Image 1: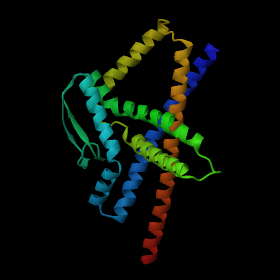
Image 2: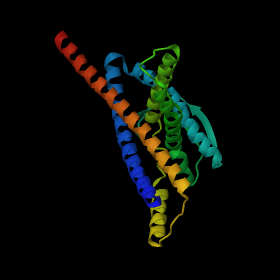
Image 3: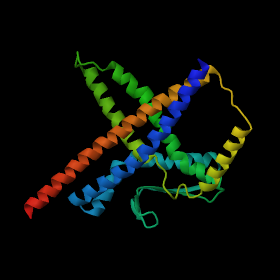
Image 4: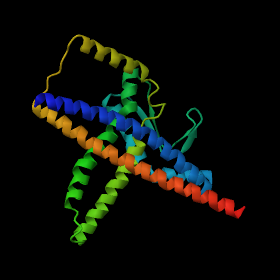
Length: 249
C-alpha cells in the first residue's frame, strides 16, 4: 500500500509538471490573441488599459507575492507600479512591477518564483474549498435561491481561476538570476540520488501530498480548458472580423 501511494504521488507529480508547462504556453497564446483582437476593435492604447483592468486582481497578487517573499528573505523592496507599459527588452506588455533591491541569485530566484508558488496555493485552495463543495451541492431538480447563489459562486471561482492561472507566471526579468540556483539544485539532487539518500515520510504525509497534487491537477486542468475555450472564441471572432472587413472591401 505504501509503495502504491509512492507510485501514485510520482504520477501526480509528472502530471502536474506537464499541466504547468501546457498552461504556461496556452496562457501566453491567450494573451497574444486577446491583445491582437482587441487592437482590431479598439486602438492599441485602449487595448492595453482594458487588459490591465481585466487582469488587475491577478497583477496585484503577483506583485504582492514578490513583496511577501522578499520581506521574508529580508530583501528591501520599493514602490509598486500598476501602470501598463511595453518593455523593449522583453517585447511584451508589463502590467505591474515592483522594485526589488539587488541580492544573491538564490534569494533573487525565490523572489522571482513567488507568484507561481502563491498562485498554485490559491488554485489549490479555490479548487478544494470552493469548487468541490459547490459541484457536490448543485442539483438540477430544484432551482432555488440557494442554487442561484451557488452558480454565482461558481462563476466567481471560474473568474478567479482564470485570472490567477494567467498572471502567476514569472517574467524573464524575474528569473534572470535563476541559472545558478537551478544548476546548484540539480547538482545537489544528483548527489543525494547517487548517495542513496532517502527522505522517509509517513503514510499520512504521502496521502496528503497525493491529495494536494490530485486537487491541484484538477484546478490546472480546468484552467487549461478555460483558456482553450477562450482561444476558440477568439479564433472565431477573428474569422468573423476578417469576413466583415472582406465584405466591406
